[in-house]
Image 1 (cartoon, one colour):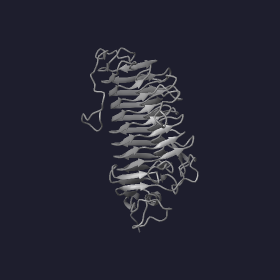
Image 2: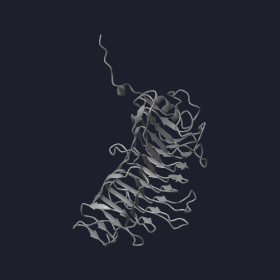
Image 3: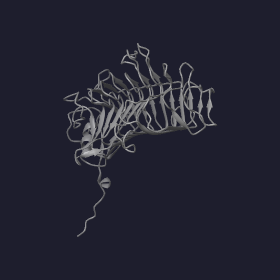
Image 4: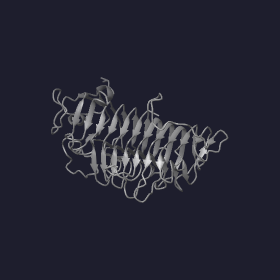
Length: 418
């Protein structure tokens, strides 16, 4: 006798959260199920859905070891997503997941983590906030994605901190799959979402998002008002492995990176040594930017008057140089980095020329638009408001021309302000 075997997705369950507090986890029951209990149940039920109604869901169970670099099993501290699943909120304005037990308290841990199995996870319609991750190697105050493919859709990651660890908001990296006994790539997709007001405090990087030798895709989203005490206020991209199609891949489309800061401490004061890369720091990798606005980011000079690249820094600090970059319809405007301007390319940062087309680099004239060693390969249609070394040499390029851009972002149509 033959039996029909249904796909796992058809057999998957739905777990509905019915309480906003965070008790010691037990069984997720129809009339009593916390968010932690629902996620723990979903971890044992591949492909299931966790429905999260409107509400403010606070975590209150601290980690046994708050400095542990591993996410743990999710019974204490951060929520841990360890299987393919969907978390479905009712909207980022009304479904709030908060790592702070009460207003005014520190978060018990980072807010969430997705770990080790590589299977797809979707989080939609929520705000992730209040996370606080300490420890030198932890990282990801809002969420750590470690060896998983995760899509964050129609959501927000706001007001999370990492202390002496990288990435105030989101941290994506590869990781070991405990079932397969092998390394699994990480991939974070940020779609129609906001990453705002997150902080990486201490001599660390990436206030908003860190892509550590993995894939990061940002679509129709805004990365704004994040702070790194050291470098990379908005985004840091790192390539530490040679396969440029797998590691350090950064793709940004129809998105805005605005008003991020490098070189500020937790009180908003400039640090002693200043910051590098107010908007983005590129430590190697493969890049594609299309219809991207990078505006109003600041690398603060600090007490010694040093700052590099208010908008973007192509850094040589990564072990693998940048292996390919394409910029199309990109606006880089009014970013501030004392002395080195908006775009800075360090010696040895590029292994191949970065192409650019139909793009604008515009500043106030206080510092050069471009500085460093070796710049773009122009594909035409570009404009620089000054005569600095952007290498806009195509006959259709314009140099020293004011594009008359407004300094403030506005709704000009499209998914984000530009």
